[in-house]
Image 1 (cartoon, rainbow, N blue to C red):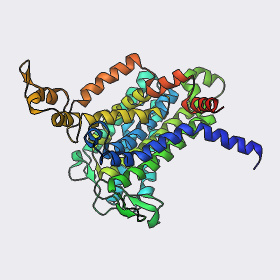
Image 2: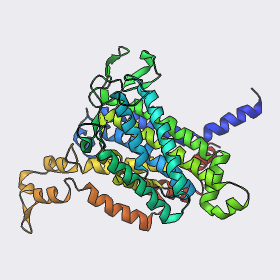
Image 3: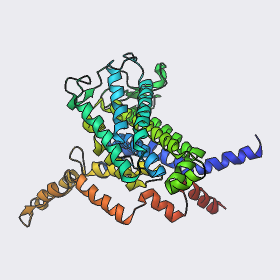
Image 4: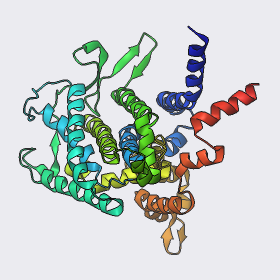
Length: 416
Protein backbone atom coordinates (compact mmCIF):
# COMPACT_ATOMS: atom_id res chain seq x y z
CA UNK A 1 0.00 0.00 0.00
CA UNK A 2 1.41 3.37 -1.03
CA UNK A 3 1.88 6.26 1.37
CA UNK A 4 -0.85 8.24 -0.43
CA UNK A 5 -3.32 5.38 0.11
CA UNK A 6 -2.39 5.17 3.79
CA UNK A 7 -2.85 8.93 4.13
CA UNK A 8 -6.29 8.72 2.48
CA UNK A 9 -7.37 5.91 4.82
CA UNK A 10 -6.16 7.84 7.90
CA UNK A 11 -7.87 11.01 6.67
CA UNK A 12 -11.12 9.16 5.98
CA UNK A 13 -10.95 7.47 9.38
CA UNK A 14 -10.53 10.83 11.13
CA UNK A 15 -13.48 12.28 9.23
CA UNK A 16 -15.69 9.36 10.21
CA UNK A 17 -14.64 9.36 13.87
CA UNK A 18 -17.75 11.26 15.09
CA UNK A 19 -19.94 8.85 13.14
CA UNK A 20 -18.21 5.92 14.81
CA UNK A 21 -18.92 7.43 18.23
CA UNK A 22 -22.61 7.90 17.38
CA UNK A 23 -22.91 4.34 16.06
CA UNK A 24 -21.21 2.98 19.17
CA UNK A 25 -23.55 5.02 21.35
CA UNK A 26 -26.62 3.57 19.64
CA UNK A 27 -25.12 0.05 19.65
CA UNK A 28 -24.27 0.11 23.36
CA UNK A 29 -27.46 1.82 24.50
CA UNK A 30 -29.55 -1.36 25.01
CA UNK A 31 -26.72 -2.89 27.05
CA UNK A 32 -26.36 0.25 29.17
CA UNK A 33 -30.12 0.42 29.69
CA UNK A 34 -30.22 -3.23 30.73
CA UNK A 35 -27.41 -2.70 33.23
CA UNK A 36 -29.05 0.40 34.73
CA UNK A 37 -32.36 -1.42 35.09
CA UNK A 38 -30.62 -3.90 37.41
CA UNK A 39 -29.13 -1.23 39.67
CA UNK A 40 -30.59 0.94 42.46
CA UNK A 41 -31.22 3.71 39.90
CA UNK A 42 -33.58 1.52 37.84
CA UNK A 43 -36.58 3.74 38.51
CA UNK A 44 -34.64 6.85 37.45
CA UNK A 45 -33.46 5.11 34.28
CA UNK A 46 -37.04 4.12 33.41
CA UNK A 47 -38.27 7.65 34.04
CA UNK A 48 -35.57 9.67 32.26
CA UNK A 49 -34.12 7.37 29.58
CA UNK A 50 -36.12 6.29 26.51
CA UNK A 51 -37.12 2.66 26.41
CA UNK A 52 -35.95 0.37 23.62
CA UNK A 53 -39.31 0.49 21.85
CA UNK A 54 -39.03 4.28 21.68
CA UNK A 55 -35.46 3.95 20.37
CA UNK A 56 -36.77 1.80 17.52
CA UNK A 57 -39.14 4.63 16.63
CA UNK A 58 -36.12 6.94 16.67
CA UNK A 59 -34.49 4.75 14.03
CA UNK A 60 -37.21 4.58 11.41
CA UNK A 61 -38.57 8.07 12.06
CA UNK A 62 -35.01 9.38 12.12
CA UNK A 63 -34.41 7.85 8.69
CA UNK A 64 -37.63 9.42 7.43
CA UNK A 65 -36.58 12.82 8.80
CA UNK A 66 -33.14 12.41 7.20
CA UNK A 67 -34.78 11.67 3.83
CA UNK A 68 -36.90 14.81 4.28
CA UNK A 69 -33.75 16.82 5.03
CA UNK A 70 -32.04 15.36 1.94
CA UNK A 71 -34.40 17.24 -0.36
CA UNK A 72 -35.54 20.13 1.83
CA UNK A 73 -32.25 20.92 3.54
CA UNK A 74 -29.97 20.55 0.53
CA UNK A 75 -32.05 22.02 -2.30
CA UNK A 76 -34.23 24.41 -0.29
CA UNK A 77 -37.47 22.87 -1.60
CA UNK A 78 -39.75 21.98 1.32
CA UNK A 79 -41.64 18.77 0.59
CA UNK A 80 -44.77 18.99 2.73
CA UNK A 81 -46.11 15.83 1.12
CA UNK A 82 -43.23 13.55 2.01
CA UNK A 83 -45.57 11.21 3.89
CA UNK A 84 -46.78 10.02 0.48
CA UNK A 85 -43.49 8.17 -0.02
CA UNK A 86 -43.29 6.92 3.57
CA UNK A 87 -46.79 5.49 3.16
CA UNK A 88 -45.95 3.99 -0.21
CA UNK A 89 -43.12 1.97 1.31
CA UNK A 90 -45.23 0.92 4.29
CA UNK A 91 -48.25 -0.18 2.29
CA UNK A 92 -46.21 -1.93 -0.38
CA UNK A 93 -44.60 -4.36 2.08
CA UNK A 94 -47.93 -4.93 3.85
CA UNK A 95 -49.76 -5.69 0.61
CA UNK A 96 -46.86 -7.83 -0.63
CA UNK A 97 -46.97 -9.87 2.59
CA UNK A 98 -50.66 -10.48 1.92
CA UNK A 99 -49.99 -11.50 -1.69
CA UNK A 100 -51.88 -8.50 -3.06
CA UNK A 101 -49.16 -6.98 -5.24
CA UNK A 102 -49.38 -8.22 -8.84
CA UNK A 103 -46.16 -9.87 -9.95
CA UNK A 104 -44.81 -10.21 -6.40
CA UNK A 105 -45.44 -13.72 -5.08
CA UNK A 106 -46.57 -14.17 -1.49
CA UNK A 107 -43.60 -15.06 0.70
CA UNK A 108 -41.13 -12.83 -1.14
CA UNK A 109 -38.31 -11.87 1.29
CA UNK A 110 -38.90 -8.57 3.06
CA UNK A 111 -35.60 -7.08 1.88
CA UNK A 112 -36.70 -7.49 -1.74
CA UNK A 113 -40.20 -6.10 -1.18
CA UNK A 114 -38.68 -3.19 0.75
CA UNK A 115 -36.44 -2.38 -2.22
CA UNK A 116 -39.35 -2.74 -4.66
CA UNK A 117 -41.51 -0.45 -2.53
CA UNK A 118 -38.72 2.12 -2.42
CA UNK A 119 -38.37 1.88 -6.20
CA UNK A 120 -42.11 2.48 -6.59
CA UNK A 121 -41.80 5.56 -4.37
CA UNK A 122 -38.90 6.71 -6.56
CA UNK A 123 -41.18 6.52 -9.62
CA UNK A 124 -44.08 8.21 -7.83
CA UNK A 125 -41.73 11.03 -6.80
CA UNK A 126 -40.70 11.54 -10.44
CA UNK A 127 -44.36 11.85 -11.42
CA UNK A 128 -45.11 14.31 -8.59
CA UNK A 129 -41.90 16.23 -9.16
CA UNK A 130 -42.57 16.61 -12.89
CA UNK A 131 -45.55 18.79 -11.95
CA UNK A 132 -44.43 20.29 -8.65
CA UNK A 133 -41.00 21.52 -9.78
CA UNK A 134 -42.70 23.83 -12.25
CA UNK A 135 -43.26 25.96 -9.15
CA UNK A 136 -41.04 27.19 -6.33
CA UNK A 137 -41.29 28.26 -2.71
CA UNK A 138 -44.56 27.90 -0.87
CA UNK A 139 -46.35 26.89 -4.08
CA UNK A 140 -44.11 23.83 -4.44
CA UNK A 141 -44.66 22.92 -0.78
CA UNK A 142 -48.43 23.21 -1.04
CA UNK A 143 -48.56 21.26 -4.29
CA UNK A 144 -46.66 18.34 -2.78
CA UNK A 145 -49.00 18.49 0.21
CA UNK A 146 -51.95 18.37 -2.16
CA UNK A 147 -50.64 15.26 -3.90
CA UNK A 148 -50.05 13.57 -0.55
CA UNK A 149 -53.58 14.36 0.62
CA UNK A 150 -55.02 12.90 -2.58
CA UNK A 151 -53.10 9.68 -1.93
CA UNK A 152 -54.20 9.71 1.73
CA UNK A 153 -57.89 9.96 0.80
CA UNK A 154 -57.50 7.33 -1.91
CA UNK A 155 -55.92 4.83 0.49
CA UNK A 156 -58.56 5.50 3.15
CA UNK A 157 -61.28 4.43 0.74
CA UNK A 158 -59.52 1.77 -1.33
CA UNK A 159 -61.38 -1.45 -0.56
CA UNK A 160 -58.66 -3.57 -2.15
CA UNK A 161 -56.36 -2.85 0.80
CA UNK A 162 -58.62 -4.44 3.42
CA UNK A 163 -62.25 -4.82 4.40
CA UNK A 164 -61.85 -1.66 6.49
CA UNK A 165 -59.35 0.53 4.63
CA UNK A 166 -59.79 3.40 7.08
CA UNK A 167 -58.19 1.24 9.78
CA UNK A 168 -55.44 0.07 7.41
CA UNK A 169 -54.04 -3.37 6.74
CA UNK A 170 -52.01 -5.82 8.80
CA UNK A 171 -49.22 -8.22 8.02
CA UNK A 172 -50.47 -11.81 8.41
CA UNK A 173 -48.99 -13.91 11.18
CA UNK A 174 -46.19 -16.09 9.94
CA UNK A 175 -45.15 -13.67 7.19
CA UNK A 176 -41.39 -13.40 6.81
CA UNK A 177 -40.38 -9.91 7.94
CA UNK A 178 -36.65 -10.56 8.12
CA UNK A 179 -33.74 -8.19 7.63
CA UNK A 180 -30.56 -9.66 6.24
CA UNK A 181 -29.42 -11.45 3.10
CA UNK A 182 -32.39 -12.77 1.10
CA UNK A 183 -32.67 -16.57 0.82
CA UNK A 184 -29.90 -17.15 3.39
CA UNK A 185 -31.71 -18.16 6.58
CA UNK A 186 -28.66 -17.94 8.82
CA UNK A 187 -28.16 -14.29 7.83
CA UNK A 188 -31.77 -13.18 8.33
CA UNK A 189 -33.33 -11.86 11.52
CA UNK A 190 -37.08 -11.46 11.89
CA UNK A 191 -38.26 -8.12 13.22
CA UNK A 192 -41.51 -7.16 14.88
CA UNK A 193 -43.04 -6.31 18.23
CA UNK A 194 -44.33 -9.84 18.76
CA UNK A 195 -42.93 -11.89 15.89
CA UNK A 196 -39.25 -10.94 15.98
CA UNK A 197 -36.44 -13.40 16.62
CA UNK A 198 -35.12 -13.78 20.14
CA UNK A 199 -32.01 -15.57 21.34
CA UNK A 200 -31.15 -17.12 24.69
CA UNK A 201 -27.71 -17.74 26.19
CA UNK A 202 -25.85 -16.30 23.20
CA UNK A 203 -22.46 -17.98 22.72
CA UNK A 204 -22.91 -19.61 26.11
CA UNK A 205 -22.35 -16.27 27.84
CA UNK A 206 -25.71 -16.21 29.53
CA UNK A 207 -26.80 -13.23 27.44
CA UNK A 208 -30.39 -13.15 26.23
CA UNK A 209 -31.44 -11.04 23.26
CA UNK A 210 -35.12 -10.20 23.17
CA UNK A 211 -37.21 -9.77 20.03
CA UNK A 212 -37.25 -6.02 20.64
CA UNK A 213 -33.46 -5.88 20.83
CA UNK A 214 -33.14 -7.96 17.66
CA UNK A 215 -35.44 -5.53 15.86
CA UNK A 216 -33.45 -2.58 17.20
CA UNK A 217 -30.13 -3.82 15.82
CA UNK A 218 -31.58 -5.11 12.54
CA UNK A 219 -33.37 -1.83 11.80
CA UNK A 220 -30.30 0.06 12.92
CA UNK A 221 -28.16 -1.60 10.25
CA UNK A 222 -30.58 -0.60 7.48
CA UNK A 223 -30.77 2.97 8.80
CA UNK A 224 -26.98 3.19 9.05
CA UNK A 225 -26.44 1.97 5.47
CA UNK A 226 -29.14 4.31 4.17
CA UNK A 227 -27.58 7.27 5.95
CA UNK A 228 -24.11 6.61 4.54
CA UNK A 229 -25.50 6.26 1.01
CA UNK A 230 -27.20 9.65 1.32
CA UNK A 231 -24.07 11.11 2.87
CA UNK A 232 -21.96 9.91 -0.07
CA UNK A 233 -24.45 11.44 -2.50
CA UNK A 234 -24.31 14.77 -0.65
CA UNK A 235 -20.50 14.77 -0.86
CA UNK A 236 -20.50 13.79 -4.55
CA UNK A 237 -20.57 16.24 -7.49
CA UNK A 238 -24.33 15.65 -7.65
CA UNK A 239 -24.64 16.79 -4.04
CA UNK A 240 -22.57 19.88 -4.72
CA UNK A 241 -25.07 20.89 -7.40
CA UNK A 242 -27.93 20.31 -4.92
CA UNK A 243 -26.28 22.76 -2.53
CA UNK A 244 -25.67 25.21 -5.39
CA UNK A 245 -29.39 25.10 -6.18
CA UNK A 246 -30.18 25.84 -2.55
CA UNK A 247 -27.77 28.76 -2.40
CA UNK A 248 -28.60 30.35 -5.77
CA UNK A 249 -30.67 28.41 -8.29
CA UNK A 250 -30.40 31.07 -10.98
CA UNK A 251 -26.61 31.06 -10.81
CA UNK A 252 -26.52 27.24 -10.95
CA UNK A 253 -28.68 27.39 -14.06
CA UNK A 254 -26.51 30.14 -15.55
CA UNK A 255 -23.31 28.07 -15.31
CA UNK A 256 -24.93 25.30 -17.33
CA UNK A 257 -26.57 22.85 -14.91
CA UNK A 258 -29.97 21.47 -15.81
CA UNK A 259 -31.36 22.24 -12.38
CA UNK A 260 -34.76 20.72 -13.13
CA UNK A 261 -33.34 17.21 -13.49
CA UNK A 262 -31.01 17.64 -10.53
CA UNK A 263 -34.03 18.58 -8.40
CA UNK A 264 -35.95 15.62 -9.79
CA UNK A 265 -33.07 13.27 -8.96
CA UNK A 266 -32.76 14.63 -5.42
CA UNK A 267 -36.53 14.44 -4.88
CA UNK A 268 -36.77 10.86 -6.13
CA UNK A 269 -33.75 9.77 -4.08
CA UNK A 270 -35.24 11.24 -0.92
CA UNK A 271 -38.52 9.45 -1.71
CA UNK A 272 -36.62 6.17 -2.08
CA UNK A 273 -35.22 6.38 1.43
CA UNK A 274 -38.48 7.71 2.87
CA UNK A 275 -40.12 4.53 1.55
CA UNK A 276 -37.44 2.40 3.20
CA UNK A 277 -38.28 4.12 6.49
CA UNK A 278 -41.96 3.38 5.91
CA UNK A 279 -41.21 -0.27 5.14
CA UNK A 280 -39.21 -0.60 8.37
CA UNK A 281 -42.09 0.92 10.31
CA UNK A 282 -44.64 -1.46 8.80
CA UNK A 283 -42.44 -4.51 9.34
CA UNK A 284 -41.90 -3.67 12.99
CA UNK A 285 -45.46 -2.53 13.72
CA UNK A 286 -47.02 -5.44 11.84
CA UNK A 287 -49.14 -3.25 9.59
CA UNK A 288 -49.96 0.27 8.50
CA UNK A 289 -52.93 2.61 8.37
CA UNK A 290 -53.55 5.83 6.45
CA UNK A 291 -53.26 7.92 9.61
CA UNK A 292 -49.84 6.62 10.64
CA UNK A 293 -48.28 6.58 7.20
CA UNK A 294 -49.91 8.86 4.57
CA UNK A 295 -51.29 11.59 6.84
CA UNK A 296 -49.75 15.05 6.52
CA UNK A 297 -48.93 15.18 10.25
CA UNK A 298 -46.39 12.39 9.64
CA UNK A 299 -44.51 14.86 7.45
CA UNK A 300 -44.95 17.47 10.17
CA UNK A 301 -43.16 15.17 12.62
CA UNK A 302 -40.25 14.88 10.17
CA UNK A 303 -40.18 18.67 9.78
CA UNK A 304 -40.08 19.18 13.56
CA UNK A 305 -37.29 16.61 13.92
CA UNK A 306 -35.29 18.22 11.11
CA UNK A 307 -35.61 21.72 12.54
CA UNK A 308 -34.77 20.64 16.10
CA UNK A 309 -31.80 18.58 14.92
CA UNK A 310 -30.61 21.03 12.29
CA UNK A 311 -32.01 21.23 8.78
CA UNK A 312 -29.35 20.94 6.12
CA UNK A 313 -27.07 18.79 8.29
CA UNK A 314 -28.31 15.29 7.25
CA UNK A 315 -27.37 13.70 10.59
CA UNK A 316 -29.16 16.40 12.59
CA UNK A 317 -32.69 15.03 12.03
CA UNK A 318 -31.67 11.77 13.71
CA UNK A 319 -30.77 13.72 16.85
CA UNK A 320 -33.99 15.66 16.44
CA UNK A 321 -35.87 12.35 16.34
CA UNK A 322 -34.02 11.22 19.46
CA UNK A 323 -34.99 14.41 21.29
CA UNK A 324 -38.58 14.18 20.05
CA UNK A 325 -39.08 10.54 21.09
CA UNK A 326 -37.23 11.01 24.40
CA UNK A 327 -39.60 13.82 25.27
CA UNK A 328 -42.58 11.69 24.19
CA UNK A 329 -41.33 8.83 26.36
CA UNK A 330 -40.78 10.71 29.60
CA UNK A 331 -44.22 12.36 29.32
CA UNK A 332 -45.94 9.24 28.07
CA UNK A 333 -48.76 7.55 29.95
CA UNK A 334 -47.91 4.23 28.31
CA UNK A 335 -44.65 3.56 30.15
CA UNK A 336 -42.76 4.47 33.29
CA UNK A 337 -42.47 8.16 32.59
CA UNK A 338 -41.89 11.23 34.71
CA UNK A 339 -45.39 11.31 36.20
CA UNK A 340 -45.16 7.68 37.32
CA UNK A 341 -41.75 8.36 38.84
CA UNK A 342 -43.03 11.37 40.81
CA UNK A 343 -46.07 9.45 42.03
CA UNK A 344 -43.80 6.71 43.33
CA UNK A 345 -41.18 9.09 44.74
CA UNK A 346 -43.37 11.59 46.58
CA UNK A 347 -45.01 10.51 49.83
CA UNK A 348 -48.78 10.27 50.04
CA UNK A 349 -48.95 13.35 52.27
CA UNK A 350 -47.33 15.46 49.54
CA UNK A 351 -49.44 13.99 46.71
CA UNK A 352 -52.66 14.75 48.55
CA UNK A 353 -51.63 18.26 49.60
CA UNK A 354 -53.79 20.94 48.00
CA UNK A 355 -52.62 24.03 46.15
CA UNK A 356 -55.23 26.41 44.74
CA UNK A 357 -57.89 23.75 45.14
CA UNK A 358 -55.93 21.01 43.36
CA UNK A 359 -53.83 18.26 44.88
CA UNK A 360 -50.21 17.76 43.79
CA UNK A 361 -51.31 14.48 42.23
CA UNK A 362 -53.89 16.40 40.16
CA UNK A 363 -51.18 18.83 39.06
CA UNK A 364 -49.00 15.95 37.91
CA UNK A 365 -51.86 14.42 35.96
CA UNK A 366 -52.87 17.75 34.44
CA UNK A 367 -49.47 19.15 33.46
CA UNK A 368 -47.36 16.02 32.81
CA UNK A 369 -49.43 12.99 31.83
CA UNK A 370 -49.63 12.82 28.04
CA UNK A 371 -48.71 16.47 27.58
CA UNK A 372 -45.75 15.85 25.29
CA UNK A 373 -47.41 17.42 22.19
CA UNK A 374 -48.08 20.64 24.13
CA UNK A 375 -44.50 21.03 25.35
CA UNK A 376 -43.04 19.89 22.04
CA UNK A 377 -44.99 22.66 20.34
CA UNK A 378 -43.55 25.20 22.77
CA UNK A 379 -40.03 23.82 22.31
CA UNK A 380 -40.46 23.92 18.53
CA UNK A 381 -41.38 27.61 18.66
CA UNK A 382 -38.39 28.33 20.90
CA UNK A 383 -36.05 26.49 18.53
CA UNK A 384 -37.34 28.45 15.55
CA UNK A 385 -36.91 31.74 17.42
CA UNK A 386 -33.64 31.19 19.27
CA UNK A 387 -31.90 28.12 17.78
CA UNK A 388 -32.85 28.32 14.08
CA UNK A 389 -29.94 26.14 13.02
CA UNK A 390 -30.97 23.30 15.34
CA UNK A 391 -28.84 21.21 17.66
CA UNK A 392 -26.22 19.99 15.19
CA UNK A 393 -26.29 23.19 13.16
CA UNK A 394 -25.55 25.26 16.26
CA UNK A 395 -22.66 22.98 17.19
CA UNK A 396 -21.28 23.42 13.69
CA UNK A 397 -21.53 27.19 14.03
CA UNK A 398 -19.70 27.06 17.35
CA UNK A 399 -16.94 24.82 15.96
CA UNK A 400 -16.63 26.77 12.75
CA UNK A 401 -17.25 23.78 10.50
CA UNK A 402 -18.73 20.31 10.31
CA UNK A 403 -18.37 18.15 13.40
CA UNK A 404 -16.71 15.36 11.41
CA UNK A 405 -13.95 17.79 10.39
CA UNK A 406 -13.48 19.85 13.54
CA UNK A 407 -13.55 17.24 16.31
CA UNK A 408 -10.77 15.07 14.79
CA UNK A 409 -8.67 18.20 14.25
CA UNK A 410 -9.19 19.26 17.86
CA UNK A 411 -8.28 15.80 19.14
CA UNK A 412 -5.18 15.83 16.95
CA UNK A 413 -4.05 19.11 18.54
CA UNK A 414 -4.50 17.65 22.04
CA UNK A 415 -2.60 14.51 21.03
CA UNK A 416 0.35 16.60 19.95
